[in-house]
Image 1: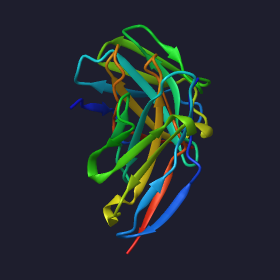
Image 2: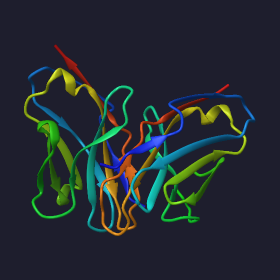
Image 3: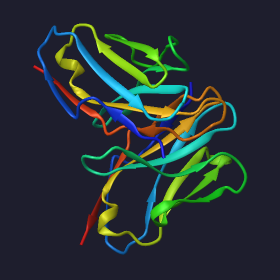
Length: 112
Length: 113
């Protein structure tokens, strides 16, 4: 089955600084990749997704992610972080069978 | 947008009790999933279902069973709850046939004492 690794358990950035959250996947075929965000006490919300085509995808809330097949990566980026971005972020990979596997998550803290 | 409802936000049960967690969707989506979410482990797939009366084991099915008698409802059953099943349980749905994102319910935080 497919799998996802998020190497960073916790990241702290200052408000206004840039952000990059790492995600590496393992899957034998073309991956379907997703980033979700979970704010405290909330459910998961989709930020962006990659199925095919342009390897740089834009999402909601000013986030973007780049698919790099050679590195098996799908890193999430934001040029300027806002205090409201503090949350937990999950990377996920879907298969042709429509089942998904999630990473362990990266918790983002934003310093004022 | 798809609305996914879970029967309880918080639940406290005793060891050995039989526990039912329900998930209901308001669209006609075929695929439904149950995950548990634990700190440092992310979301782990327990069971999923492609259609009524169909079920597939996920990565951690032990101690759980599921029921899908109607398309809109997918139940997770803990036959005899144990303390190691204390967790956040999330239900998700998506449409069959094309790779779509999953839509999640708000979660049920279950505590087994």
